[in-house]
Length: 168
Image 1: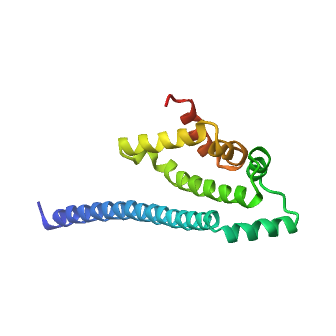
Image 2: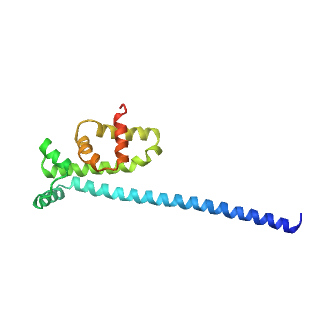
């Protein structure tokens, strides 16, 4: 074998190494982007949950919102209207429950896309809590029927519906 042949083999191996490296970098870039987006969604979700829970637990804030909505003739969302009508709650109380239920939904919505990655016990606990909340009569079921089903992403609703038909 002469030096030209050895050089050609070296160049070929070098070219292959470059393509392998570029492929690896493409995979790493895609993974980093996916993780960045997941982190962004998680941060957004945590902020929304915090704001909703603040609204749910701050009586002064819920009262101000209810009075402002009434003064501006803003109709309540169907869940709040149903609570006021069926349970006899004041607008402030029903709005606080709306915010609390929305915070829990926001938490569940962050878990649903990754439920397959949970450990067996964590997945069972999550599915049990979700099935219990939305599968039996009560505030959470009313929230699900009057607010989530008409407004939430169809994939999330399909997931919940699938859970609700499974035995407890």
